[in-house]
Length: 114
Length: 118
Image (cartoon, rainbow over all chains, first blue to last red; front, side, top):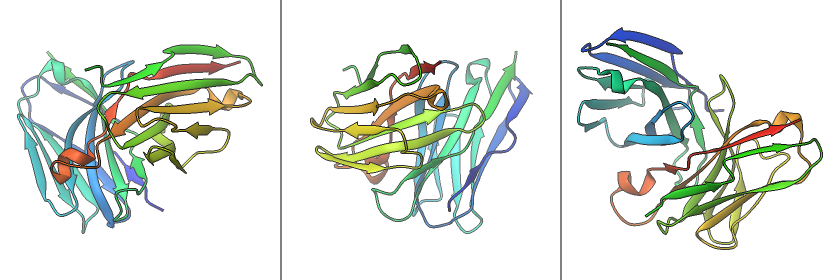
């Protein structure tokens, strides 16, 4: 059974620092992995999606990497800003079919101190 | 372009009551999903649909039913609500057709429905 883990559950860093959020999964047979941002009381916003054949995706100050063999993905945030404060979730689509089920991690709550 | 719209935003039910949550998307997406989010447990998939007229069970389907009679709408029903169904419910959709492999798999979420069952 696919399990997705995000450690730590919460992280606080000063503004301007570069930081890395971690996501691990137990079954390497994934279709894709997606990183989301969730603000308090809001829905989820997709940040980056990495297909199983890809190693990384970049968008602005964000870079997501994928290492299927080790069952790990990282989300790198450069030059963090207070507006980056939110909960970040990763999710994997299990299996090789586009109709496969999606499994979410429980998220990392990020706080950027001004 | 409203994206994914969920109604209602809030609801309080008594144990045993029934209700239907509505999800509507105006992006012509093929796939739609219903999730519940509970503290410390992330999001768990309840049911999903790969197209009009089709539905499938997710990770936690018990106590819920769904219907996708129209492509743009995905309904989640609770026939007899229980306190364990107190949660925040999210609907999402994804294209799954056309565009790049990345673009067609991105999920777009609604703002959520906060449900309390007393």
